Image 1 (cartoon, rainbow, N blue to C red):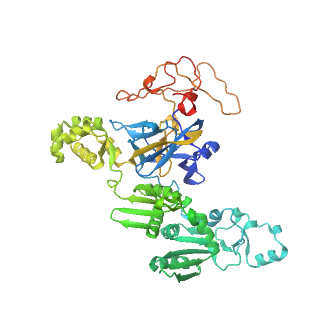
Image 2: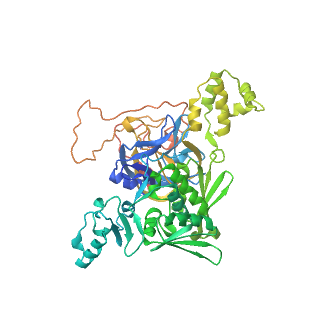
Image 3: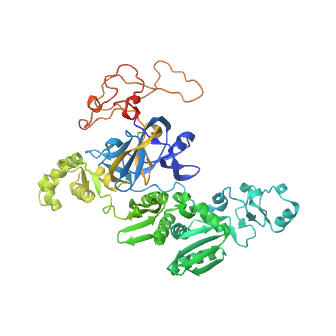
Length: 556
């Protein structure tokens, strides 16, 4: 089995209940939700969602940390596959242990929400945090358990067309109700429109704000954006106050315990402020506005690149996904000032131009050679059309002098062959679809040996076989049983009934499938004695020999 991930590795999934969000794979496998993985289509390279078709628990294995040039990271077993392209431009797998130096697939964009959230229901946002919240409605606040209140309190609330939210059945609260903190004059409507203004404000809060129990405080030396925020809160009749620090920072204080609770519920507080979990299901223009507020508050802009600075590793992770959602090429780097772990800093770069970051693509040399032949062109003719000094520029690409090729070179070759009426659709997919390529810079063993988990993504038997996970987002292969090139021997078929009822198997019943993949060349590292392979020339069913691996005290 080519597996797998540790329980605490994060995946980016979609579920009907919560939309897009982040989930630890151990929890996903334990609960087996109706969920869709964010995956690339191996045929078109477009990124979208596909149903998860199985949830898998695998034996304990050593965990490795794979780091990409962009700062993306993922923790996997040594034989878990990541994805690249072969010389024909087809998707191919490479085991993590062999991936150093390879260009592997990461998302160029993420899917937009299946059904966007256009209004915030504060009852849903606040969840169980209903203490001290009062609901108001002139036509009745809904079903209230008045027996939980003393008689004097009942009269008080009824005289004001109100009730404590904690004793009110939330499903019966009318849509036009208002909410307020106990003994507060600031009332908010139950629903708040999800607008670009709200998105920008939340982004600015994550960058430059903090929340106390009854206040939200936002500060910056430039007063103008704070005035914009004050105008937004004025729409909800929320009182604000102004102050200025000795070093010239203007501070806007939003005087509302309810707004404070809403902001903390949406985007966190203190050092744990982050991209709101709900944001992934908001309209694209609101997501873009959140990004603008985040960069305006705690970022740096220069031509062609924005940079976010943060001391919060989780925010750096989510910001990298945010950049992918908006189509930016993103990279993250980490540093410590004066080697002090307490001063960790992350910087996330966002590039609007893919040529500035992620400009290299795995070299589809055989595909390019085929296209040139179909176009009836010599290497010299192609070099002349593209303005290269000699045919060696084309020869170096086609003969794999380089394992990668620049995007702009590939684009020029595509346009050249398209002009000669050759089908360049695969080059279109490589260049214009939703994936980018990122080089693996290190694969390092950790001290973790533990149970691992995996998913199957094979809707209706179609081998999509990938999902998105890890810090910043890396496409990972799902589990599959491979017979490696070079293997000789009997294949062991392993069956397990995880249900509570017996399953009867009868002769001739179809219980498995065998899928063949044709190689375009001999395997670079065939299965066998040179690799210390454990199952070569096996006869009959064999139990696992994983205990023969060095990490378990063996010599393999």
